[in-house]
Figure 1: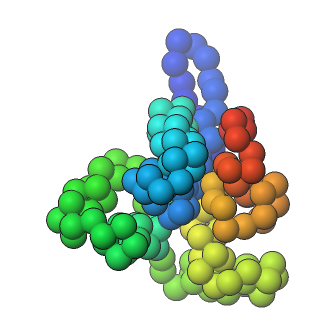
Figure 2 (figure 1 turned 90 degrees about the vertical axis):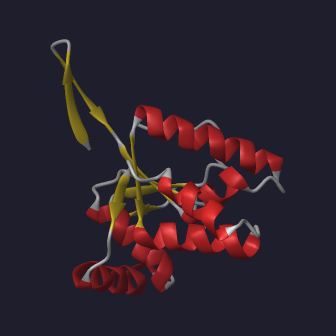
Length: 155
């Protein structure tokens, strides 16, 4: 977590990892409940916490925008560009090895494990996704499914 100083007070801001599906729902209006909740959530995380994604998330997001939602590639690139000011984790061999360990230990897919490893590397306390079990703790990271846990509080 990041320490912030101001007005003589110290307080901590949680780093929150946002998975691909949440970003997709901010654009996709097929399920308005998930769309509205995802937009509210991303806005809240961006204003009150330190949002984190990985290059994997951005790649999947771009692919989802252009293939699933049929958004023009240049428009999709511009949407991606709006994430330039948030923390982005890039994989290296160590991160991939950690993902393999997580996959074996927690019986997760490699790709889900790579998300967890990226969140761990960035020192996130929360991983927001609908792909893992809500409330589960993996390597000290709390998994939150915002559609099962609407209005949850980030510590």
